[in-house]
Picture (cartoon, rainbow, N blue to C red):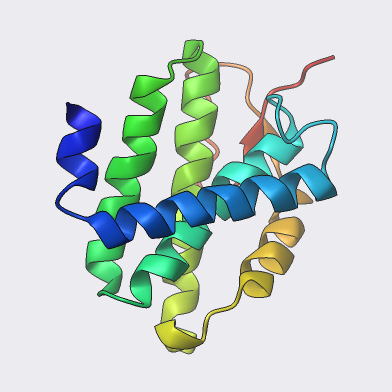
Length: 151
């Protein structure tokens, strides 16, 4: 019911988000085949990229504020409907926020109609160089991608 209450009032946002999901997953799998579907660095990239893509596509038909609100609700709901262990959930929500924040950071310099996927792919790959290993629910790595050390 909660999913329907989100997607039914926003059918275009929902379709665009589904497209963003497929795109982000495909790109992350190609770039990071070993960690995109685990809790490693590729997963951090995938979650942030996913949110950038949702924002990019939804901003082409609506305001950045509405796209941001929808993206946050959609990605938070995803974590609620498909629960993980607490540290994994913290990691995913954190990286989702990194993606939304990164989009909003780029927004003043580029008209929202002219965003391209490569802007986010390149920028997030650079952010990965400074990514932090999340070890505790108390860790706070504001502004950095985070992942779990699976060794």
